[in-house]
Image (cartoon, rainbow, N blue to C red; front, side):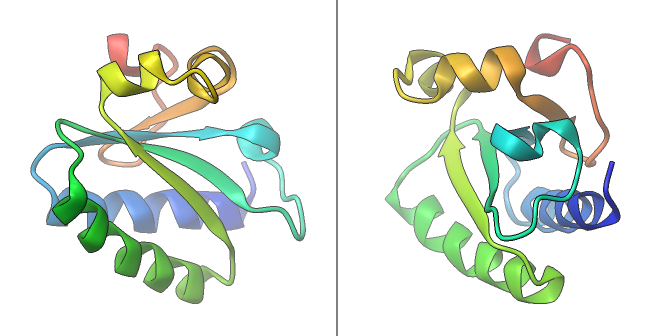
Length: 115
């Protein structure tokens, strides 16, 4: 995995797990699912939480901005619950089939949320 992607995953997982008790982990998907650097491409991430509501979204966006600034990257974060991800007709199948899951500690978990 590229050092940049690893840094983003670690920083994001660290702050999300400290901020939200119900943070479960994240999926990296899209071009970055291969673990390589892709200059000028957003890092597409699905953050998995126990619940997602307006208040949580308002708390998440400043965190994303801070991690982007610290890592000189652009992050496209999609907050979801496990249920809402499975029901998402736009990205759900892609994320669950091809995405790489990292638990709340930022450690890759090959069996995703099911394990």
